[in-house]
Structures are given as C-alpha cells and as structure tokens.
Image: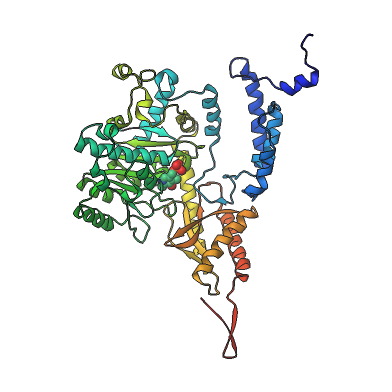
Length: 520
Ligand SMILES: *Cc1c(COP(=O)(O)O)cnc(C)c1O
C-alpha cells in the first residue's frame, strides 16, 4: 500500500516549513520581521498603561495550555498567540508611568541593530567567528575607555550585564593580588590559599548586591565584603572607608579591593572616586568603579567633566542597557591595563590555541568569562553612528533634569518624606499621612501603595528599604516624560495613600471620656 497523507494530516504536520536564514530564507525573514514589528507597534499603541497588573496565577494557565510538543501553528498564528501571553501583560518601559527600575526605553537604531546581529549570528569568541565584529567591539570599548579617561593601555570586554562585569572585576582584583603574592596563575591552578580567608573587599552599604554575590562565587565568602557607611548624601564616607581599611589591617586582614559605586541603584549617589582611589592605592588594593548606572555621565554634554576621577580606576563597570538606551543585554567591563584581562585567558586547542595568540589573532574569548557571546557592541555602534554620543547624553541628562524638577515639586508636599536631592534620576521617598501611624504600619502602607498602583496598572514604582524602613522610589530614565506627567504620578501616590491610610488609622480609644487617636 502506498503511503499517502490526507490533506489535513499533512497540514497538521507541516503548516510552515522550518526555514533557515539564507538567500531564500531572507524573503521569509522580511515578512516575519515586518509582521513582528507591526504586532509590536500595535501592542505599544494599545499600551495605555505601563503594565496590565495581571498576576502570575492569572497568566500561568494560558501559558500552561500551550502544547510545545505539537506541530507548529505557523509564524502568524504564533505571533497572534503572543498577544495574551506576552505583549498584553508586558511591562512597557517607554510608558511615562513606568518609573520603577533602571530599565530604559530603547533607541530604534539599537533595536533594529539587534536584528542584524541576530540574523548574522556572529559569535564574539574568536576572530574566525567574528571577522569585522571583533574590531567594532574593540573600537566601542576603546571609545568608552577614552570617555572614562582611562590610559592608552586600557581595554575591556562586553558582558551580559553589570553583575557579570562586577564578578569579573573582583576576579581580576583577586588574581592581581594573588599573582603578586603567590605567583602568576597560582589561584587559577591551585585554588585559594589559606590566607584568602583574610582577604577583604570594601564597598559602601549602598553598593549593588552583585559584589557580595561575586565574593561568594570567588570563594572569598560574602563576609569578605566589608560594608562602609555612607555620608548624608548616600555616598561612601571616605573617612569611614579609611577607618575600615586601617582596622582591617590592624586585625590582620588584607584589603584586596575597593568598590566605588558611581551611581547607586537606589539614590543615584556618586561615590568620591578620587578619595577611594587614594585609599586603595595606599593599601595596594584594586579600585573597581561600578558605574553601571552613572556611566550615562560619560556622554552627558553638560556633566561629562565630572567623570575625570574615573581615570584612577583599575576597572569600571558600564551598563549601556541602563544609561545608553540600549536593549538588554549591553554592558562592559573596562580595565586600565589591558594585560590584566590575561587573568581570564585559557587556551583551548580547538578554539583559541596559543599559536593564534602568538600570531596576534584578536580572539576576544581570551578576555572574557563567556565563550559563545553575542555581538552586543553592534547596537551601541549603530546608535553612535546614527544619532551620535551627544544625543544619547542629552537623553540621560533629561532623566536627571526631570528628577530634579520633580523633587523640587515634591518638596512642597508635607505628606511626602524625601531622603535626598537627586544626583542622577532617582527619588527615594515615602508617603506619610498627617495622621500619626506606627512605623510598621507606615512601612506596610507604602508597600500597599506600590502594589495597589501596579495591580491596577496605574503606575509602576519601585520599593526599597532604607535603614530598615520601607520607601518608594522613582527611577527616571525616560527623556520624553514631562514634569506634569510626574505630577500626575505624585497625585496618584497621594490619593492612593490617603485611601489606603483610611483603612489603617489607629483604633479610636476612649480616654478619660474624650476620644483620642492613638498615635503610634
Ligand atoms: C543594575 C546594577 C548592577 C547590575 O547590573 P545588571 O546589568 O542588572 O546585571 C550593578 N551595579 C549597579 C550600581 C547597578 O545599578
């Protein structure tokens, strides 16, 4: 009997051929990209709110129902299906009422460049997989290093984000110290010496948690990171750093690194890099500058000069996906002496043999923790070439200016507690109604405001804890948001706060025949 498929069975099995990107495939890719961008454009048009507020339990059944073992349904159907699964509930960072985390709206030039990089599918590990691309990455790194005033010996590498950049920086710090004291490659080969239990890294109490995580991954333990107090402007207190480093020495501990945060995640505060550098040098410790957020100042037409002190860093983290309006992922670690990247070099015969390095082949894998790696430099390159660095800097400046204006207006509202004048684009504050509420109730009330606004899709704010108390946070990166739109968000916070506070007023107590409120 001849095998034959009935038409419906055939359509069940091959509604759409699996097409690879090649000369023929590009026609299909063009149609699919067009359809994809159309769908995204409609979703953005429909997004009247920054988020839908849908909970994981509301969304999960629809995702669970999708059968991934079945035949394909065709690209158009799959795209249509994405509506309820992803595009409707997605969080829209371009929306003026998205003021939560360090997520930026992205440049169109960068988003389009993602398509180029994905389609060519370059991998940045070796020159023989990345001809051309490697030179573009190297040039973007050299450009950034120059903006950061690093010396001509500087180099760097694109990473998956600030977390990986900070891990790599502290790994280099560890290797730098141990190479001097135990010989080159000693830790890489033999693991940590017993003395490593006394190695210490100093970072402000406001520094990003990724340094602590890195210390744990590097075998130093989270306790190796010594938290340094901040001053009244939430910057690392340099006197406190000095005391902490001296006390560590006196206790037989060994400072191997100082992390200065250039733009803290909560306050946008800029640590005194020159002060940190002086103390790091005195103790022969590595100075890492975590500029994941503050790197936007490198392209600021008005504040670029403030970045001069970065020249003293041994390494710098920059997150272009926070401050340069680039899609995730786009980040780099810069080092003052390119040779230090040799601490992560491993020669594999099949990939980057030592002979290739000797012949001068620019294999970027020699400088990276990753092997196969995306060509993330391309999108930044395309943005720099399309609109120029200054335009990117103006966008960053606009977020900072919006924060200053919003802060000034918020100061006039007695029901708002403000913790700092913004140095970059964040504002940490909380709602405190005129009625006295117990501290714990006030904490819970502020979290309830955030959650209420998010669940109703009205606005997305961030929440954080400062010295044990709960606060709300605006993170402003959107150059197109106006002060009046920020006023609307502040009004929403106040109205929601009043409404929720009404449920939480202290119980009425009758004291001595008179009604009093028990102000906690
Ligand atoms: C966001 C942030 C990081 C982590 O960067 P990712 O790109 O999210 O991994 C590190 N340091 C600071 C100061 C940050 O704000």
